Image 1 (spheres, one colour):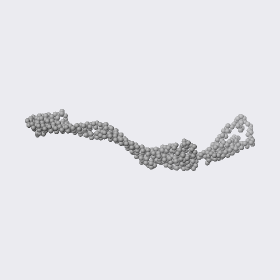
Image 2 (cartoon, helix red, strand yellow):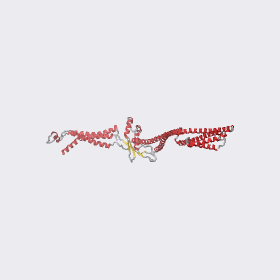
Image 3 (cartoon, rainbow, N blue to C red):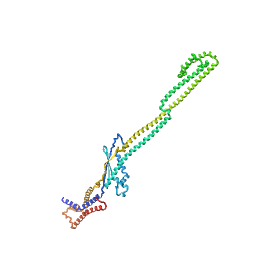
Image 4 (cartoon, rainbow, N blue to C red):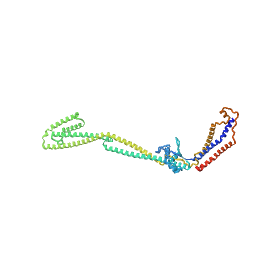
Length: 500
């Protein structure tokens, strides 16, 4: 066991210069890499999305965009090409701007800008905005510019939506109002064109029709009475030679007048075949025959008296004819009015259907107009809420400040990790070399390689020159590492990039 330990210790001591050389070289490279990494500074700001200051059940805003969606919209608008180029030029984010293309500037700005939204149920909605740059003052200035643009974009977004909503409903109310006026004009025009056949006057026209029918029947009765009266006058004159007003009426003539009146009334109700009508006509004919017989003696009167009676009869007949002509005119007028009423009644159902369709369209337009008016009032309230900043808004919780320390790179961690990794790489190289080395260096190697057991072994004896040469190489390697790494760092600091 002691021999094995001594053997491995000898290997370690033998390979120690190589381990130091490899690990030192790699560690130096890591140190140089860590020191060459530019220092990056990060500034950040925290925004909070506040709830509306006015309860929504009292007055709601017309902006229905939720807080997460609103923040996403603002981010997309903020990271547009025009905005990023404007911000980069305004704050001189990249001093070598003349050698960088606009596309590369936009790509770098987007890579260095980060948004960290936070939202959830029963949680406040906030947004953290960060920017990374090699210049501390630039990071704070860019984040401040971002914050200003976010706030302005939020106000513009919400007020724009509210104003567009108000303008839309103003146009809708105006359009529906004009459509309502046109529909009212159509209804008025239709009513004026069919004023005699409108549904609302149907009851009046039916009553008027009934009254005219009764009036016509009454005029017909009067006309029949006049016709009978005329016929009686002629019969009396032919029977007596006197007019009805020239001589005093006898009881038989008075009775005849009464029967004629009864006959006129009966004819207004019954037909000629009615027994009552037939009875009255029989009585009238019998009474007229009796009057004619009794008046036979009076036919020898003087000629002057007969002429006077004829004149009176002519006047009476003319009066009756005039009255009958007047009655005929009234009947004709009533017939014309009845015809017009019947025509209007016949046209009323179709007009009612058309008018109902027009009125239904008017009611639909009116309902939409009233609804648009209510929504216009709501839109006006919503616009007022947004203009006075009483609705949902974004406020700044933490303003960006100029960072004092870089957040990246962590040089201590990089160097420590590099040293450990370099040492591990050197040890791994030694293990690999020993694994590939097939040289016989101990009795066990002879036994394993030749299958013999040596009686004794003589170790390799180095000369004084070989020892000195080996020591020189080790010293040279250590000196190269100790002097080369600082010299390289100094050269980089002076000629290429100042190191912190």
